[in-house]
Every structure is written in C-alpha cells, then in structure tokens.
Amino acid sequence: MAEFSQNRGKRRDGEVLGGAVDFLLANARLVLGVGGAAVLGIATLAVKRLIDRATSPRDEDDAKQDSTCLEDSWQELSLLKATPRLQPRPRPAALSQPVPPPAPSPPAPEGPADAPTSPQLCSPVPSVCLTFQEKLLAFERDHVTMPVAHVALAKELAGDIALELQAYLRNKFPELPFGALVPGGPLYDGLQAGAADPVRLLVPLALEPGLWSLVPGVDTVARDPRCWAVRRTQLEFHPRGSSPWDRFLVGGYLSSRVLLELVRKALTASVNWPAIGSLLGCLIRPCVASEELLLEVQHERLDLRVAVLLATAGAQAGDLLLAWPLEGLAGNLWLQDWYPAEAAQLRALDERDAGTRRRLLLLLCGVCRGHPALGRLGRSPLAQVVLHLGEQEADWGEEALGERFLQALELLIGSLERASLPCRFSRGVNLLDGLREEDIDDMGCALYWGLRAPEGLL
Image 1 (cartoon, rainbow, N blue to C red):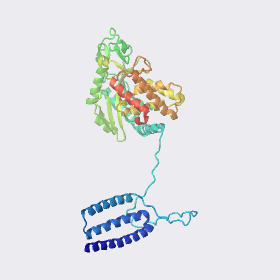
Image 2 (image 1 turned 180 degrees about the vertical axis):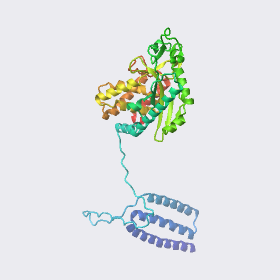
Image 3 (image 1 turned 90 degrees about the horizontal axis):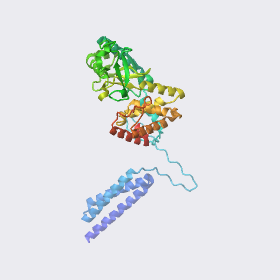
Image 4 (image 1 turned 60 degrees about the vertical axis):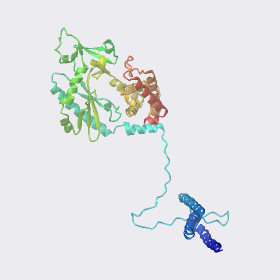
C-alpha cells in the first residue's frame, strides 16, 4: 500500500511537472518558434529524466529504456542544431492580406575593433567555364611569352658573353682564324618559348676557300643524310700543315669531334667565368654534364642558357653546318642546321597573311617542354609540323589558334604512327630517326589523350 501511494505520488508529481513543461513549451513556441521549442523541450525532458533517476530507484529495464531515450534525444538535438532556424512570422488574419516582411535583425552592439564577429554566409561565386581557345591564350600569356624587359636583358647578357668569349678564343688560340661570335636563335627571331630555350652563340670557322669541299653524308661510310663531311683538298699544291685547321684532320676530313673537345676543355678549365660573371653582374657556369657546349647564366632577374655552336658555311647560301656530338660513324661529320631556313619560312608565311604560325610553334614548344614524354620532341620536328600545316589555305588568325593547335596534334599523331616525319628541305631526312620505338609509343599515347582532352596538356 505504501509502495502504491509512493508510485501514485510520483505520478502526481510527474503530472504537475508535465503540465508545467506543456505550459512552458506552448509559450516557447510563440517566442522561439517550432525549432527552438523542440530544442527546449528535448533539453527539459532530459533534465527531468535525470532528476527522476537521481531521486527514485529504478529497475534495470527502466534504466536501459531511459538511457536509450536519452541517446535518441541527443541525436535529435544534434540534428536540430545543424538545421538553420528561421525567424517566426505572424500568422496573417486572412489569406488575402499580404504577409508582412520579416523584421530586420537588431544591429550588433558597438564594441572594440578586435571583438570577434559572427561569420557571414556568402553566396557562392559562379564558376567560369573557359573555352579551350581562352585556356590556350592564358597558357601562352603565363608560360610561353617572355616579358619585354627579360628579352632585352637576355640579349644584353648574350652580347656581353659573346664579346668576352671572342676575346678569350683569340688570345688562347691566335693561330685559329675564328670569325666574330654572333648571338642569335629563337630569342632574336621572336621564337623564344620561355627562358628554357638557349641562346645560340655561333663560333664561325674561317676556312680557306679552295682548300675544303663538302661531301653529302649519304656518300660517306655513315650514310647519314642529315650530315656533311668537310674534306681537305688541294693537298698536292697545299700540303698538309699549310692550313691551321689541318691539326684537326681525321682521315683527310675536318673532324667536328676533335674541335668540340678542344673548345670544351677551354670552356670548362681555362676560362675565368667567375671573373667574367662578376664583371657582367651574373653567375656563369659551364654545363659539364651536357654533351653540348652549354653555359648556364644566373641573373637576379632571370636564368639563361647559352649554347656555344662551332659552325661553318653549308653548301648553299645561308646554310650552316654545326659541330654536334654525333654517335657512331657520323661522329666526325657536321650536322646540317635547319633552324635558319625554318625561321625564315615561318616569318615569310606569317607576313603574307598576318598569321599566327610562329605563335603556334611557341605553344607547341611550351607544351612539349613541360611534358615528361613529349619533352623528347625537339624544336625542329615541331617547326616542320607547323610548316607542313602552315601552307594550307586556312584561317591563321588568332581566333583560329585553338583549332590549328588541334590540327598540329593530329599531324604529329599521324607522323608518329608511321614513325616518319620528312624534312621539308631534304626529303631523305626523317626527323624521327633518332627516337626509340618506346619513345614514339609514349609520345603517341600522350598526344592521343591530349587530342581527346587538350586542356590536360596545358
């Protein structure tokens, strides 16, 4: 009986507390809105259960049930906290009456300048969808075009290095008639694709007329159409030793390899580059690891590479033969330099219709230079692709640059599939001959996926 009375008293207390809760929730709904009232109700219920559990003993089943209900209440509370609460609106008297706008939120109290402020929700910025043409022009602006000030500084440094190196060669080898060193290349022809392309510093050899003749590479034991042999002639009238270049003869031919070794030793061991760099306000170091004759120049405003090229005149006016590190039987031959002819023809085609062929070449060079597989493609194959494409009667304005870029990729893919890219100036020369089959496969795969998603190449 006492237990029944106790339980009955507890129920009466619960009814009184429940009535108070209902009254509180009914008034809170008007003030806090539905969401706030729900939060307050759940919190009040949780407090009530905690008080009941502390003041009266419970069996295990009731304890488990209250624990489960309490956990569910916290989960609901977390969900309600994550839901944004809206300002309550007064109910209109009739449907025809307009709903008044929500009352403006009260201004924040003025406080010190370093008081924390509540974060404000910002509307998301709409994403800008650029076309491939726009992305290509942005890539050209950010990664290909050199600033005018950097171009002027690079030309100044290249000219100063040419003067210093010319003075050194004349003092070191007074018996060898080297011509005037002339800096040139893409930097001077508007074809510089960033600072990675080296400045060409030509070191011309003044060969005596009548004592030397050119032999095509296909007529030598090397059978290489890219090269030429420089043969010593008139030995019966001008015996060996009458020319200062006779000391570099190998089998009756002027050896490019022997001349390269001579100049390489001078550049790496004899030239006082620290003193020259200090005079010019930069740091100059010969690149020992490279087979080419390269100088690395570091200035506070830019980095520059200078390629020292021993050269002699070719068979036709304007042609150049370079002393290049070739392998095998062609090691003593001279490599035909196609760059002057490529640059001159691209310039003539662009001037004819105000085209963008040279800009296309710069974009191709910039894309290939930064790609792990396409970096094996040199400037000459890319220039030949642009020349093959450039003679077509098509729109070469800036608005068609993206379309021409994709056409160049298609032409490259076709050439790699055949493993053949004939030179425009010598049909017997395949510009892809120096590439391995694995390199061709890697480049073809990269270009294929680049043609499907060209933005990935930029």
